[in-house]
Length: 289
Length: 297
Image 1 (cartoon, helix red, strand yellow):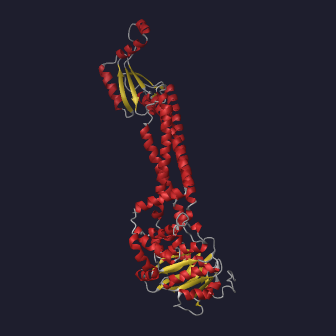
Image 2: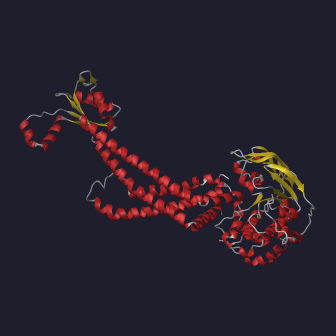
Image 3: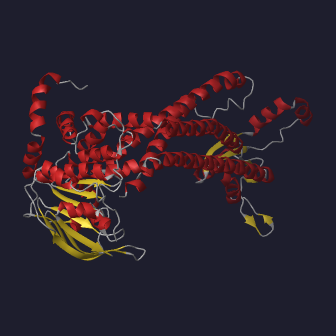
């Protein structure tokens, strides 16, 4: 049975409150992926589905460590295909994908779970385990990797504090709002401090204000050194963020550029202010094309 | 740590999915109950059929005035035949006494002993009776030929009766076997289907686990343990009901009806062990296997 080490907690809590991100930041270099600074490399990647549809056609791009990249495009343009290829849920029909220098084709089926532990994934529909509390959902990601109770006691409260969920610890997912559920999903994706975080339409089901909160959280994670790749069709959001954008259309890359000013050292607070700026007069339209 | 974790996961799943778990438990309880009743019935039937088949014999009558040397030689020939299990010799004197005990008046009238020396030959397999008879007395163009030994007068198998007995018992055994096979197959499909339904409801959960980086066995173990628990509980309940039925109904009747107390049914403890192993194995393996299609992500 777990022995409560409650006595030693207050001191650690204050330390952790001040520097949950410092902990995250320091965790990243330990996990530094081999193969230089390129985290994701797509070379002539092609994905044709059995029914004949083209998911991805000759896609070539690379993403450096610590970058923040948006993947945009209308529905069916291949954004999700990129994501699913990256977590090896799908196999490409042509070309090569390298993540941290490792060719994904070389990872056999048995090794896929271990590969996935190096990638945090966030989905539009949250994909939480409905039978588990917020705490247990996040803890599951640690248990999967063989994490001990000690690990869980040390890491889960910290990550939940970082994501602002400390008071919802014992709630079940269906008792939370959409924004809160997405925060749980992000907490779960980040609790292992993966060097790469993928988010497939993370704000697709959320209202603009909540979306900013989620983006802010992802920004914080990115500032801690994690590479972040976000697929979205929220163009207003993308325009405001002024980050690198890769646009897909019918499986082809039609644009790959860093838009506008690239303010790398912006604080999370400044970031939030800028994101909220102009929100009331021009509510972001979801589908513009 | 790992085993504890898997056990807790299984218990959690059972508690949070009470309805499907109960459905699986009820299915196993019912099928096991039917199997538990059926196994002894099949066994008693086959046992009875086998008892009848054991009575099928070949009678070899020796010629009148056969010498001691003849008897020894024929006995040797018979015991050396590959299909023969046992050879019993009934001398004419023994036969006479046996028959006289049955019907003293008739034999008193006869005066002398008209009976020959006889060998009672038990075949290894009742189906070989006619083959043995044919070997001893090969068929010739004009019906029955001469016996292979001059000391043998005739070979008797009560041909028609034997054929009938063999046919009927073979049919009974075949029916019992087919029914048992059908029942077992139906039980397995029923249990597998119930498990698959309850897993289908949780396939999203499995998908999420895979995406978080859980290995297949990390996901599978709790499901298998869950299957063991459900299988064990269902089977134990079925055994309990069977035991009540046995004590309340069968045992009082057994003293009156010999069929129920047929010696060839397996003892109750053996039945319990077989049922427990089958119930738990089907449920656990079913859970593990049904999960496979959902693990392909």
